[in-house]
Image 1: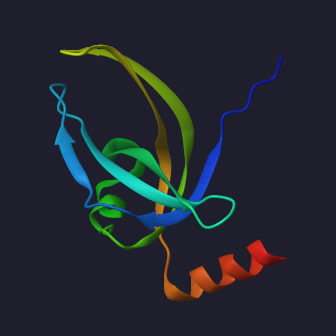
Image 2 (image 1 turned 180 degrees about the vertical axis):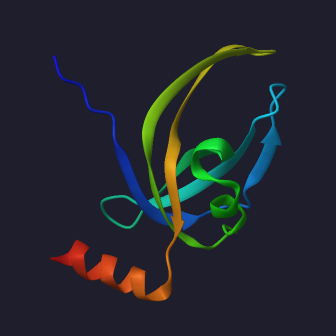
Length: 113
């Protein structure tokens, strides 16, 4: 059986990115991307961008309100907290790019076609 786990999102950064350093020394930036869903509703999606994979420069260029293009995979994590067992489904980015004004217009035209 063939399985494919590829996610490509174009959306707006809904909140300030949060950077965390793990006990291993690795750094990860957590983003919340708002993606338009069918209709007018915005769907907020969590994105984890590991600096070793995406690059620190790509993450540092991102701020709240920026339009971004994210390439990655869906991952489901399970963990325990004070409230019991929890799970989180997020996009783990393998590529992250800030879209410029010209890129946005091209994406809107291709989406309408």
